[in-house]
Length: 318
Image (cartoon, rainbow, N blue to C red; front, side):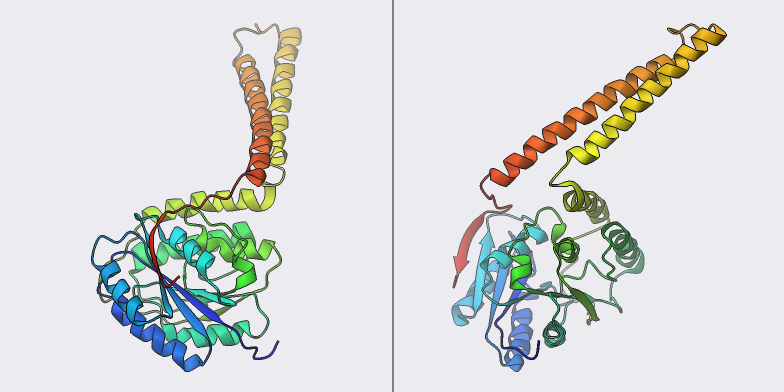
């Protein structure tokens, strides 16, 4: 597609990163100035309780290219990134962490790769500077699991540093911890994806905001993403299929009970198979009814008004 001229938006969420905000702004401004392209930077204060917002506000008053969104409370990284996506005006949108572990100098390589015609370029922290057992091992397991379930093979879904074409992310709604699944969701919609190695720096100031509990959230969100990607339009297919299988199991079990009674003289009431048959039948009916209810919910979902997973307290330069 050539070296097309484009506007760039960089989205950076912060939560209690007062020691990193100013240096992040300096590094980011220097890296973007070297690109010689139009750009904007959006800092999202995700309900910080330290002086992060005070520093961000001072920076924004001196730099009109820096736009600020302040949440009323902490809504999480996904909500912060989503708010940045909504406010972004650039043709290419680049989210990155605000803890200085992502290197702004990698933005140039992401832009170069996306100029080759890709819709998404994902960063890969091949030489990750994080604790092995608490961060690297869970990440390896999660990345492998996500790749298998979604069918989109990336080494590092958890790397925030990615480049997206605006038209790809503007139609994707994010909830929970789902920002990491954007490449998978976009791929199901026909987007083209590439991956490049990016730098990863050790954290110098502050502390990580996420622990092992995030693994459970990723697993649950992965189940949701798979359901939405495969069965959102027709949830009756998954619930109805399970219901039919359970109902068939009920009749098969009941048949076995009748045969045992007819040929071997077993009492029907005393057989555990009778209770199992009733259980299968009840579960089968429940699953079918759940499928019908899910169909109704989906129709309400498509017809309802859009609701945001966050509340904004204040904005600057927007």
